Amino acid sequence: MIDHTSEHDIRVALIGFGLGGASFHAPLIAATPGMMLATIVTSNDERASQARRLYPAARIAPAVHSLWDHAADHDLVVITTPNRYHAPLALEALSAGLPVVVDKPFARTAAEARRVIQCARDKGLAVIPYHNRRWDSEYLTLRRLLDDGVLGRILRFESRLERWRPQLKGGWRERSGAEDAGGLLYDLGTHLIDQALTLFGPVTQVYAELDTRRAGAQTDDDVFVALTHANGVRSHLWTSAVAAHIGPRLRVLGERGAFVKQDADPQEAALRSGKIPDGPDWGAESPEAWGVVTDGVHPHPVQSEPGAYQKFYAGISAMLRDAALPPVAAEDAVAGLRIIEAAQRSAAARSVIELGTE
Image (cartoon, rainbow, N blue to C red; front, side, top):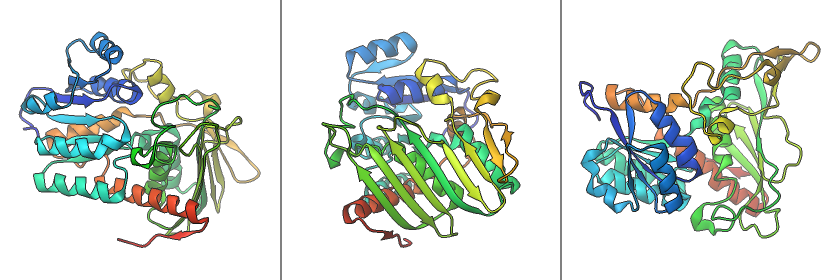
């Protein structure tokens, strides 16, 4: 932990500068007061040039091993590499004495995640899953509605992150074996599962359909997961690369009414286009994009909460400087991975899987 009396910035080493590192981590780190990108690790020459142009004060390193040689020059490591390297690199960072943020999925299996968490405990260091979609606009709006009791007791939670990408892009996510943890269940499915768990709590049953629809694909690209929560809520989760018509981002049914949100949070598109969260309007939606609450007779628009991905790294800063709780608990990643593993077993057996407590 950083001494809270220290005046220096939190020096971050970012491992990986693909889409995740360049769009979903580096801009947020750079925009966080009191944080700086000290090192960016990438072996790709084109990405290295991009990193030098965007972050001229950062050291660009071609290999991870050089980072451990300079561990004392850093306060935090962020891992956003192909999934198979997440847990091994987290263990290396912890062994070097550095706390770690790990992009999703936190690990390939729940057992692998537990090993990382145990190592962090043994070292007295923090390890934090990057579940940034807890700060999606629609998620924050739904939390407000739930806190206010607008919908009454919730019966069903429907959540989608769908795309229309009928042609393969190539790369390990679409053409990889099980050891790479590719496919949509591990990718967008991780977010959907995490949101369902944080909203409605532990899960007792899992049913899943995992399909590979596109010619040449070797990983799932069309996913449905049904969860039964211990409190009786049922979550139905979809993610697909072959959805020519995008369904509602959220549809939440309660005893007193329903909330429907068609459009997804705008932050992803903004970050992909090179924008950074540096103004008061970041994450805000126009009224045309707001969701609707209805009692079955009288629908009315509900103002969206602004999306706020920047709060993740603000929470990391508070954790390191002021001993605040981490913005996401490492154990939450284990809970999500247990559901992913149950979903894989369910799809293989074409049956419901009972998910016992640990």
